[in-house]
Amino acid sequence: MAGVSEVVLRSMNINEKLGPRLIAAAEQNAILRIGWTNAGDPVPKNGELGLCPALPEGARLRALGVLGSWVAAFGSGGSFTLQGDAGSFLGAANQGTTIVCERMAGHFTGFMMESGSITVLDGSGDDTGAEMRGGHIIVRGATGARVGGGMHDGLILVHGDVGPDPGAGMTGGRIVVNGRCPAPPPGVLLRPLSKKEVTEINGLIEDESMHVPSDAVCLVPQEGLHIESTGFTVSTDDLSNIGLTSEDPPLRAYETVDTVALVGLSEEVQSLALPLPLLPCIDAGSTMQATKENAEAVHNVLNRHPALVLEQPRPVDMLLVAKANLLDIRGALPEAGGFAIDLQHLPPMDAEQLDGLLVALRSMAKDNVPAALVEAISRVQALHARAAHHGIDLAMARIEDGSGLSEASALPMTGRSKKEHLGTGQTQTGFLLGFAASGHDLAVLMASGVDVVSCAAPMADTEDIAYWLQGTQEDLASELRRVGVKSIDMLERKHLRALNHETAAVSGLRLAGYERPLPHWFAR
Image 1 (cartoon, rainbow, N blue to C red):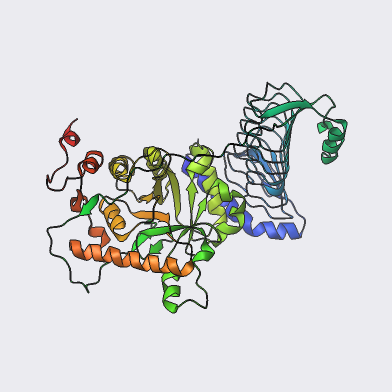
Image 2: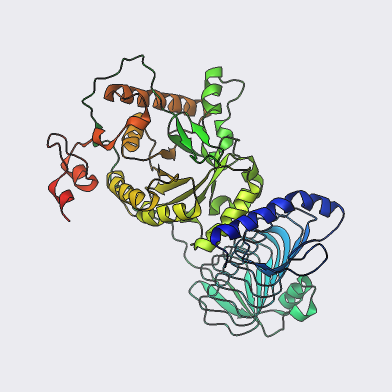
């Protein structure tokens, strides 16, 4: 059996060849085929994943074989027919594509789809239609647990039995079941279909064999009390209780120091150069675009500084791929200089499913852009292990993950995990902070072995962001001169001191004055 890397390579090659042919085939109203030779002989695919992302209007594809995850995702039109089985996330974030799977589909079929249609002819896995916004999904055969979980709108029709918790957390839409249906969870109402609804639903379905009988049942959301979210536990500390010391003489105030960092160390990656090891986390890349009214110095600072954005990325920005912007990925990703997958805010994925998403995203993005994974700090070991396995350029741990872990306690957690899972590889480590980083914060994190830091900008105005970035760079340079090093690469753990007992206890850093770690850090 082919290894994972070989499957990924085959999948990327198929997508690369399909790209130029899609537009020409659409203009000629031709059908592109995957899984047949030019002579028409069947050569079924086996495990290829992430195929045919972002199908445009007019595209027509037919595939043969057993395909993996994230097939025909992010589509905006056209049609895709699979003569075989599909893995998880078939047609995810669909916005107009007509998809037919002639056998079985995996979990999360139609995840977050907004429009279009998906038809599965031999059953589907768990979470079919989860968080869908519109369109319709038709399944002939049994479905797994939580069909329509968290859906907001749209129609799911199942000609077969459904698993437990159908419609869990749904706030809109309808789930029609022509088969056995267990008692719905709280907040979901089970009722019969009206004659008007039967006529309306059958009017959407061209295939009469898929029409809804009058005795089918319907699941809809039930009105209940609306409770405001109280949020989650936040970090109990920051980095102000960690100091930087050195026995080396300070540099002159006018000496040049190197604060530049790279995202992407591999020779195969188009690295992003950061003037300082900071990726400001901003909603829209347009916020980083200065106007004619701004001074030239503001333009210079912003134009050379990448950011981590949710929408409207510039060519130097990394696009954060999360549930909040999944429906906008198709248009935004080709403009970005890299992307970061927010694992904490997407459904849990195994290695094959994550490979499928990576193939789909890399096929839509520019060639050889850096890729990052973002995950909760409490799962940093799993983050580093996955990043190494999938060849990710940057593994970034989010401090504010609800666990309440402090930045100081995250330092030894990250250091141990980095040593165990990343070793001397080319995967970099990063922190996504819950506060705006200062030059001191960046110096502390660089000395502890973190390569890149991301945080929200402390202000929303374009010019103010430029002043913050420039000021932070100068503060970082001043810290380097004070410590007596000419580059952030020369900062080491030996430069760090915990300024109080509590910080020394959780970080393992040498306590200032005591000049060694607390005794419990030497215990086995």
